[in-house]
Length: 293
Length: 275
Image 1: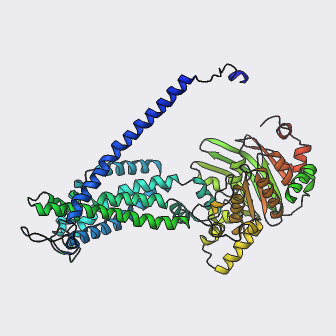
Image 2: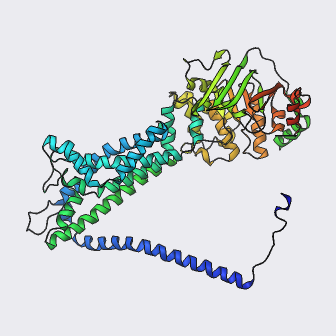
Image 3: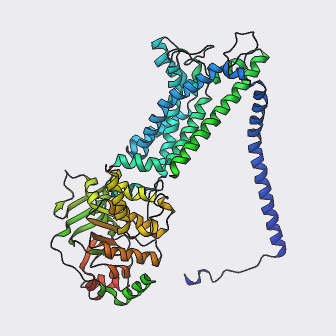
C-alpha cells in the first residue's frame, strides 16, 4: 500500500498543452451551447407562432360567445373553455386520488410480486394510445347509457391520469429517506399517519409536479374525447350530456375549410396553452407556500 | 468555556466521575434473544438486564449486532423484511413481544435517537418536537405548549431556539438538530431512550454537549447508547456491554470493562488491538 503513489510522475503541462486544453474546453462549451439552442429553438418557435397567430383572433367575443352556426363570421369558444375546465375537474377527481393512493400502495405497501405486475400494467397503460382509452369508455359508459356525456369524457381523461400519477407518486415517495419513517415509527406513530403526515408532506412538491404533468398531458388530449364527450356547439346543462372541449373544438375548426374558423382554432390553441400555464403557476405557488412552513 | 473545562475534567478523571446507582427493577430484562435477518443470524442467545435510571453503553466492532440489538429493544427491527426473533424482552416487567401488544405502544415507551439527526424537513422546530404527541392524538394546546418548553429545556436547546420556534427544524446546526431529535423523542415521555451512535456525525463540542445532556437525562430516563467511541462509553456510561459477532461477550460496570475485563476478547477490543 505504501508504494502505491511512489511511481507517480509529477509534471507540469507545457504552455502548448495548456493552450490545447483551453481550446478543447472552449469547443466543448460551444458545442453544448449549440445543442441547447437547437433544442430550445423549436420550442420557442412553436410558442411564438402560437402567440402570433392566436393573439390576433383573441377577442372578448372569443371568451363570451358561443360558436356561430357554420358559415357565419365571429362567435367564440366560451362553451369549450368552460367544457375543458369541467372535463379536467372531472378527470382530476378520478385520476388524482386514485393515482396518489396507487402510488402510496406501490411505494409503502404491497409485495414484490404484486408490485411488479402493477408497475408493468401501469407502464403498458402509460404507453397505450389515448384513443384506446376513449374506446374503452365508449364501451363501458357510452353504449350502456346510450349517450355521449361529460362523465364519459372525464372518465376517459381520468383513467389516462391514473397510471401517470401513480408512477410519479411512487418515485417521489421512494425518494423520501427511510430515516424519516424510522424517526416516526420510533415515536410510536401509526404507520398510516407517518405516511399521510410525514412522508406525503415531504414528497408534496414532487407529487404536485407529477399531478401537473398529468393534467397538462390530458388537457390536450383530443382522441379520447371524440366518442365520449363528443363536443357540443351550445352550453352544456347536464354532465350526462355531450360537452364541448377546447381540443375537440380546435380539431373541428382546424380541419374546416373556412379561414375565420382557422383563426379561431389558433386562438383556442393559445387559450389551451395559457390554461395549462395558469394551472402550473397556481399549483406551484400553493405548493411552495405549504412546504416551506 | 465552562463546558470545555468540564470536558477536560472529565477526560482527566475518566470513568471515576460517574457513580453507578443501584436500582431494583431492571429497565430491560433480555432473555435468550436470538435474531435473524432472513438466513443470517445477527444475535445469538443474548441475555442480560439493563438497569433503570442508568446509562448503559453497547460497544463492539462494526457488524457485531449492536444496532440490531438496540432496535430489538423498541421492535424497530420488525420494519426490515425477513427479520425474525426468538426469546423475550421485558420492559419494567412487561413483555414487549406479546402478540397483544402493538409495536407503536412499545415505541412510545422506548424512545430512540438515530445516528444521523433526522428532523422532519417540512416542519418547524416546535412542530418537530410536538409531532409525536400531535400524531398520537394530543390536541390540548396548553399541554402541548408546556411539553414543548419542557422537552426543549430537557434537551438543553430551549435557550438557543426559544425566540424562533417557527423556523424550520433543518435550519439548525448539526449538533442542535441532534438535540432537537432528542427533544422530539423526550416529548412523548418515554421510559427509556435508545441512542444509536448519536454523536458519530458531530464535532467534539457538539458531542460534549450531548454527553452532558446524557448525564442530566439519566435521572429521568434510562439510557442505552450504542457507540463506536470507547472514550465516550467510558466517559458517560455506568455499565457497558461488549458485543462481538452477534454475541454478548461481557457485561459489567464500565470501569471494570475498561480497566479489568474478564474476557480476553474484551480486553483486546478496549485496548485497541482489534475492531
